[in-house]
Image (cartoon, rainbow, N blue to C red; front, side, top):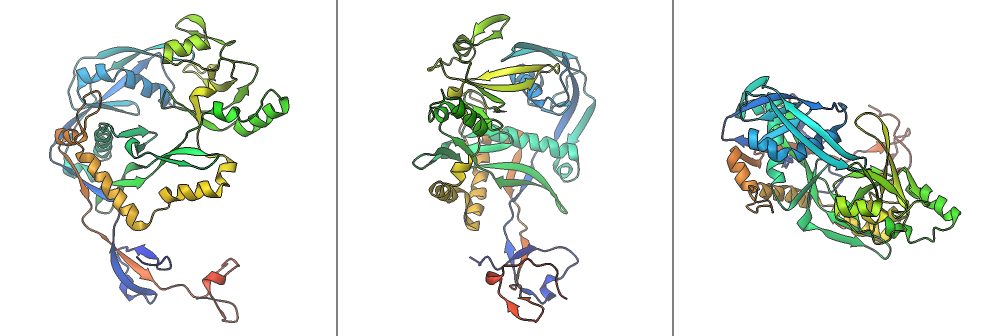
Length: 417
């Protein structure tokens, strides 16, 4: 293992680093790039779609909800299919106009929509060479990679991050407890030799205590304490335990409780206690706890108010007190501050996920079966990059007195040639 004073830089064409006076020697370095090998040729059809009533172009949450709830119907017609932006993609040609009615429930009630998919506007043949140069082909392969990984029952997918639920670790001290999930993020990187799958380690950390637990640390019947709690919590993100969704706290309502608050659900006014029983099959244990208020805008641009139960919510991220806890941060660093060789091994282990034979509860195809279906093989990038070790920089003052890096307390303003 080389010391941190040896700085490795990637070689660039047209520069002969071997002849530079400050270069000690060269070596080969591992890069987190992987080759995608296509064993099949695909025909991809691009379909325009229209949603009625119209949803905002930036409202990706509603759009993703619609296609999530319509997924089974769509796959029965189009086979394996994907949505990206304003287009719908399938490997199957459908000449008829397709209309699918769908609905979902939210805090403001039942929302009904119709998805209309018209005849395809683009027909493309995609093969191995196209991945290296064609943006649409690259996008198609990105969607396939995500579909393969989402078939793995040991992975959860949230906001472009895959995290391994079976590798959960509890990190806790006397007053703090978090669940740590190692994970990763995939993307395609364009290089001079083509496009490659890039895998970056990205972890997910979830607080174990609920916002209800946090509130119960205080006797919040005091106005000053309530204001202090609001000051600490307003503006913070939180996650609801019954769905993969995050919100931001706009207010804590100490004068409202699940018992005295009603909402509109399926055209009728019902109490929050009944709503959670009916919509989420959840029983609220403390019916007198305060409520979390979130202000949102619906698909028509109208302001709406959402109420959440602290019992079913956890704060995202860390509070200031937690980052100052030396013992907690020390425990956390055991999982996040990895040596280079450990990072390399973890990234290589991710390749095993593409050959996993385990199926999910819905009996969908396994990741390995998906790879075989698509004719996709993911393998390490064979051509390692050249890297060069540089000599430690020597700094001197205006009197040519050498200053060691470990003793430097002033900024470097300019270099002297």
